[in-house]
Amino acid sequence: MGKKRSRIEIISDMLSAIQTKGGRIKPTHLMYKANLSNEQMKSYLEELLDKELVEKIKSEKDNTYLIITDRGDKFVQKLREMKQFERSFGF
Amino acid sequence: MINILFSPRWFFGKDILIDVVSVIVLALISYVTFRYYRINKNKTQHLSFSIATGLLALSFIFKIITNFTLYELEMHTKTFGLLTFTYQTVEASNTLFLIGTLLYRFLTLIGFYILFSTYYKEKNRSIYLIMAYFIFVATYFASQAYYIFHLSALLFLLFIVKKYLDNYRRTRDKPAKLILTSFLIILISNAIFIFVELNHLLYVIAEIVQLLGYVMLLISLITVLRYGKKKK
Image 1 (spheres, rainbow over the protein chains, first blue to last red):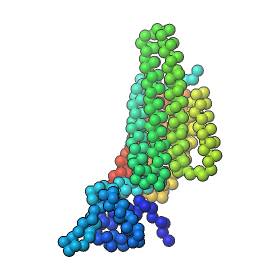
Image 2: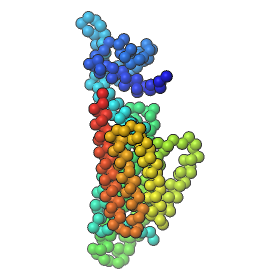
Image 3: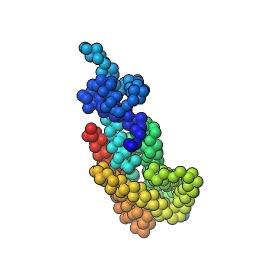
C-alpha cells in the first residue's frame, strides 16, 4: 500500500490534473484524476476556490468546469521547485 | 593575549568581500527555504534549514564587523604611530573584537549544528543540552586555541557532507551533485582554516576556497530552481 498523501501533495495533484487537461476540467473528472473521495473533493475544492487557485465556470451547455487561475499556475510552479529542492537537498 | 589577525596586510578587505558573498548566498537560501516552509508548515525541515542558514549568514556578518574594526585599527596604528592614542583604541576594540568573535563562532557552530540536526534527528532532548555544552566550550576555549573552533565546524560538516553524498548516490541528479560539491569545498576551506596559525598565506587560500564553495552553492540553488521549473 502506498504512503498516505499529505495535504500539499493532494493540492499539487489536483492542480496538476487541471493543468494536464489544458487548464479546464469537470469536477467529477478531477475527483477521479486526483484519486479523491467525494468528501475530500468538497473540502479541498473549497480551499482551492477560497485561495483563488481555481475558478468555477459554466459552459454554454450549462456544464460546470473548473479552471486553473494564473495564481494556481504560479503555485504549481512553486510546488515543483519546492519538490526539486527537497529532492536535491535530501529532505 | 589571543592572536587575532590572520590575514596578510595585502589581503585586508578582500576577505571581507568574500564573507559578504557568503552572507548573500546564505541569506538567499534562508529566504527561499522559509518561503517553502510557509507553503508547507508540516515540513519542519524547511524551517530548521532556513534557521541554520540564517544563523550562518548572521555569523558572517559578525565576522565582517569584527574584521573591519580590526583592519581599521591596524591602519590607524600604522598611519599615526601615536602610542597613547593607539593603546586606548586597542583596548576599546579588543572588547568589541572579543564579543564579535565569540558571537561569530557561537552562531557558526549553532548554525552547523541545526543543519546537522536537520538530517540527523534526535528524539532524546538531553542530547541538545550536551550539544549546547560542547558548542559553548568550543566557542569559548577557541580563544586560546583557534583551531578548536574550525575543528568543531569541520566535524559537523563531515556528517552533513556524508548525508549529501548518500543523497547524491540515491538520486543521481545534477543539483544534488552540485550541492555535495559545494559543501565539500566549504568543508575543505574549514580544514585549511585549522592551520592558519602556522602560515598566514593559508588564511588567503582558505578564504578563496570558501568563496568557491559559496559561489558553487549559489550555482546549486539556481540549478535546483531551474530543474524545478522544467519539471512537469
